[in-house]
Image (tube, rainbow, N blue to C red; front, side, top):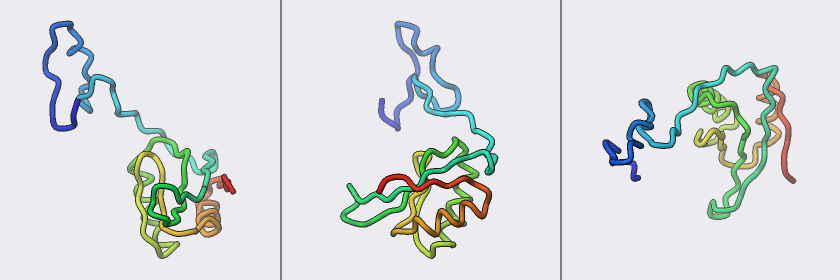
Length: 117
C-alpha cells in the first residue's frame, strides 16, 4: 500500500484491523518510551557505505522517543559544529565525531559505547 492511499474497506474484514493513528494495516507507530539517561546505553559507530564515500557518525539503539531525540540531535549537531539528522530511531552526524559524541552523551548522563572498528 502506498503512502498516499488509505485502506477503507475489504471484503475479508481486514479493514477492521487498521491502526487508528497511522492508518496502516500493520501498525507502524510505537508508543514512546521514557528516556532516563543514566539507564540508557547508546552505541556510536561510523558508516560510509551508501553515502557517496562520506563518513557519518551514527548513534543507534535509541529508545523510541522521537521528540526527545530530535532535540538531542540539535544539541549534538551544535556540539560537533556539523550537520546531521534524526531518522529511523538513529541520530546521524556528518563527519567522524565519535570522540566528541561519546563525551557529549556521557556529559548528559548517557552510557555511550563505541561500536565497530
